[in-house]
Image (cartoon, rainbow, N blue to C red; front, side, top):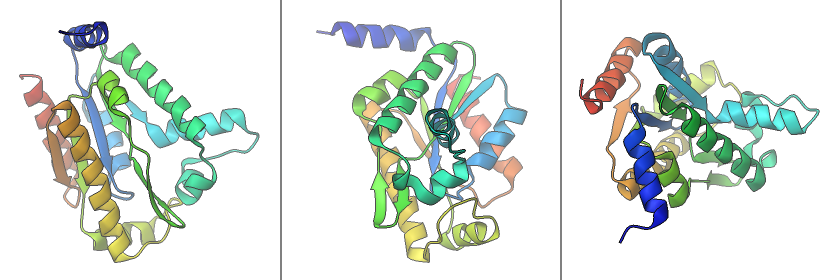
Length: 213
C-alpha cells in the first residue's frame, strides 16, 4: 500500500514537464565548463552549482569573502554539516520552484579531497527521492589529464598524485552509480577529454531522447 509521502512524491514527478539532471565528476573533470556551455546552447535550462551556492551562503553568515576557490582549497576546514544541510534545503527549494519551468542541471560532487585523505558527504535516500533526478551524468578523464588541468589552472584545487586523481574519480563515480541504483535511473559516464562541442551534443542528445524528442 502506498504511503501518503509516496503518493505525494509520485504526483510531483508526474507534474514535471522537464528533466532534473545530476551532473558530477572529480575536480577538473570539466563540470563547470560543460555547465557554461549548456547554459549558452540549451534552453530552457536552469543550473544549481552547489559549490557556488555554498560559497554564497558562507559569505552571508561571515564577514569573510569566501569563494569557490577557498572551498576547493580548505573544504572541511570551512564547511560544517549544518552548512551542508542548509544548502541541501536551498537545492530542494530550487528544484521545487523551477522543475515545471525548465530542465535543471545540478552541478555537485559528494567527494572532496582533504588533508587526511578523502571525505564523502552524499545525499540521503530521502533527499534523492525529493530531488527526483531523471538522468545522471558523470564526467571522467585520465588522471594525467586531471593533473595537467590542475597544474595549468588550479582554481584552489589541491595538488594530488596520479593515484589520488584516479581514486577520486572512482569514488565519485561509485557514489553516482549508487544514486542511480537507489532511485532506478540511468547513469551516463562521459569522457570529458574530447572537443567541448561533442560533449555538449552528447549530453543534449541524451536529454532529448529521455524527453521523447
